[in-house]
Amino acid sequence: MKQVLGKVVSNSEVKPEYFLMEIEAPSLAGEAKPGQFLTIRCGNATSPLLRRPLGFHRINDPRFQVLYEVVGKGTRLLSEMKAGNKVDILGPMGNGFKIPDKPKDVVIVAGGIGVAPLVALAETLAGKKHKRIYAVIGARDRKSLLCERDFRDMGIETLVATDDGSCGRKCFATQILEDLFSAKRDFSPVIFACGPEAMLQKVAAIARKRKAEAYASLEENIACGVGACLGCAIETRSGYKLVCEDGPVFNLNEVVWR
Ligand SMILES: Cc1cc2nc3c(=O)[nH]c(=O)nc-3n(C[C@H](O)[C@H](O)[C@H](O)COP(=O)(O)OP(=O)(O)OC[C@H]3O[C@@H](n4cnc5c(N)ncnc54)[C@H](O)[C@@H]3O)c2cc1C
Ligand code: FES
Image (tube, rainbow, N blue to C red; front, side):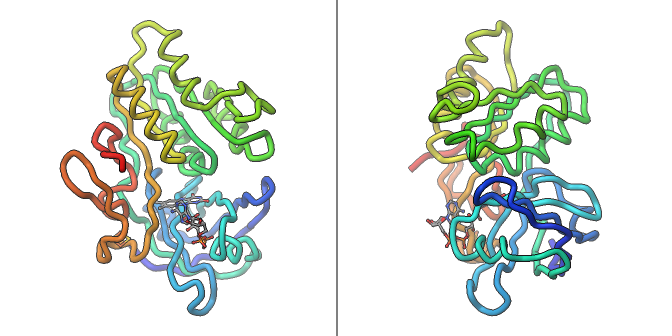
């Protein structure tokens, strides 16, 4: 992990309140793996005091991209940055996704902005020999649906669920995951997920029922980011673990939900 001053290459609004920022930071981009994250200083001075964590959305050394939703002060300040601005970044942090070494079926399940780190994962998976890769993307509505084109352009079979039915099926992403299992015989995929906790709990339940391996990138409030404050602890079957140090990717069969 290192602290670098990256250069903003571009920062544009891809959908209302969702921004894609490209940053040039050769030493950091060269080390980053899908599922790892960085922490970024969003303001110049002491406000907001804490760096904000973001996952790597696409990694293309010497650059990488972050895809983020504006939800508060930090991400609002980030959205106001312009090409040429310098950003103070710490990373890469965390464990990242473990890529299966044998060809397997894979299902990627994304909810909302949780899709952000799964695109970097899909790029790595698509470059390896896997039997079939499916991406299931869930969003509130068409306006907040992200990255459908990214997955399709990688040749990944992409299935969309929206809460209001304005795009794809009117259901939750987890319903599509359930239906994939029901429709296919001898289907024993590895599942990779990121999204709201309610979605991850459901993915965990489906994986348990179907005896499938499932991993998810969890989001907890990150303060120090380096295992010092214990503020990001979660309970697992093997005791308390830190999202910033032991995660953010965990085996979903291990997580004990509150
Ligand atoms: C490992 C990791 C990777 C992440 N990757 C991404 C990413 O790629 N793209 C992205 O848009 N966001 C990502 N997040 C969430 C992102 O860090 C928060 O949205 C951001 O810190 C909010 O900062 P803010 O100052 O704008 O909002 P704040 O003012 O801090 O908070 C505004 C609202 O957002 C809620 N919030 C803050 N942090 C989180 C969080 N971690 N999870 C859920 N709700 C939160 C607060 O409770 C509050 O309601 C990630 C979080 C983690 C832990
Ligand atoms: S954020 Fe401080 S220990 Fe994880």
